Length: 318
Length: 312
Image (cartoon, rainbow over all chains, first blue to last red; front, side, top):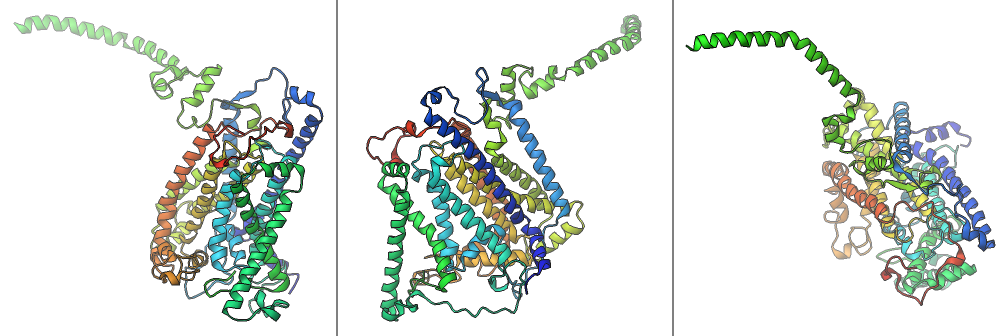
């Protein structure tokens, strides 16, 4: 049933979903806030690049500056008053929030009564959503590990010396796009899907569509070797599946690696950066980019072609 | 004999005492006035000086010392970049995260007074908190919402640090510490989820720890797990839960992780994080913009991990 606004309101107003509703506003606001400053900085950069004489005398910030002003201010009171104010504001918000909304408490834990849908805490819903597209060992273990290691590797892979300590877009296009796709496009979006879209049986329910507990998903997922044209020549036996899967995954790595390489060579500036990278940096960056891309790719081939696995082996499936 | 002498003396002493008592109101008044005058300037008392050590007058030196000689404030430098106090640059998210950690520690300790991590008691304790403990409901609400807010603040902090390129040299390592702190924040929140011992927490933790079953090599259902002899009774999920199902042991383990182990680990990392902010030269900006023409040329490729800091 469509047009079920009541249920939508129930989902949105669920106390535990308030953080995600807040996220819906906070993340775009701060993204806008950052990019407004980045645009102003980029304008200044253009100006200074065009006029080397000005670049020598300008104080190189978007903030007002007059000669004679102190470059530094006292922490007391100029910083600490802000900190105290922030603490007070956060306390007020938290108190009002805690008075108006109660923390959820369900029935006592009962192993014999399964919750449907059984959802992880909202900040892990991205991982739970990944379970649709990957086996648990990838979605629950490998991907989180890759996210953590990948985040920690960022400063060692990013050789761009520009944009250190100020908002800019033009000087760091590639880095910013990668992060935005990862953070907004994958992480936050999947949390929002997991919260608002996924219903009983972890099935896809559009907003205002009633959560039907009796709905059955009749779609049949197939593996890549069972799909035309591959089904014509891939023998459906152990070695056939193993070798075909390995070739398919290998082909993905080659194609994705090539595309990523082209992307890294798109502009003259990025080619310059590329030439500054060591082999280890290039290989690490490529690996993380290819693995990150594998998530949207897997989502697309699942949703468009209903393909479950690319590579089927007795020990694991990808 | 002593009586005579003593008698004479005692009359003199009595007289002396009488006069002193007579004069007492005057003396006390004068003394009291003096003390009261002193109270108008409490910063000059010995008590005050023993606590605060330095003079507080309106001089730059005094302002700097006020920050540097205070154990709670000395995390700050005395002076900072004039634009660094702008909200538009930092969004204040790192500080808000730390403040929320303090709020959570405070409310968490209070909650611990009412909570038994046992299957028999845990759920009843929450009901007791909600219905009978004065401000118990408010306490629990604050703890939960502060936890959610902290997760959001951590993410926004990371977002800001990325967009300002603040992870770049010399702050690479502190970014890594920050990533670990973010993971610890999520784990803190997740371990707390089970503690009310209700359906919500139970199934969330069941879903979460079922994934551990699929850990490659170390989980019974993970790739090559069974080949390595993993069963539901010796794999990594068993270690997390203290059993093969989410039950009393899992509750106790979640409790210890949540209330003791992770907060201690996180505190250590926080100490390192804040210390490194200072040692890496304070917060990253707002820094003067650097132009493309100012990038220094490299003298041939070198392994960057080994490159001495400070070189481009």
